[in-house]
Length: 186
Image (cartoon, rainbow, N blue to C red; front, top):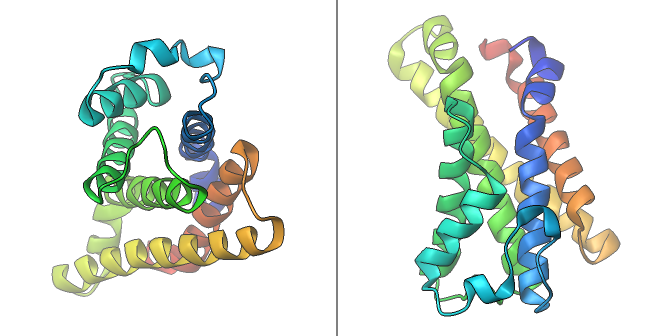
């Protein structure tokens, strides 16, 4: 992936998607229209089930592009949105903590997917055994989730809320840190 800075650059779309998810969920929670670039009106979402709303959001926030990376992003977004709904929440009426949870889950899933797709075999091949390699992959994925939770808590304590740009920057920072910390595994 070209080192930690290369990985961060390559995953810039993930950070951008995190910002878009944050922006869309914040607009829905405030009962405001989604930004025009998404092409979705409130009326289009009216009467849809939670699962159908998730499908619409995934389609507009992480459009199909035919790549493994694109499919990983779509899966990460769908899982994050489904997780929050399975907790009994309405995806169109989330509070700030729940929106942050969705973005954190998305980024955690996204980085985990990318680690597996892009460096998984290198980590396993470099490890003394396949079992150790798998443990290292799991360690990287756990680190991402813990680091995201900590960074979100810090940013929220400082500023109270995050906007699209702050969520995207936070995603870029955690991706960079993850690959800085675990570069020796590659």
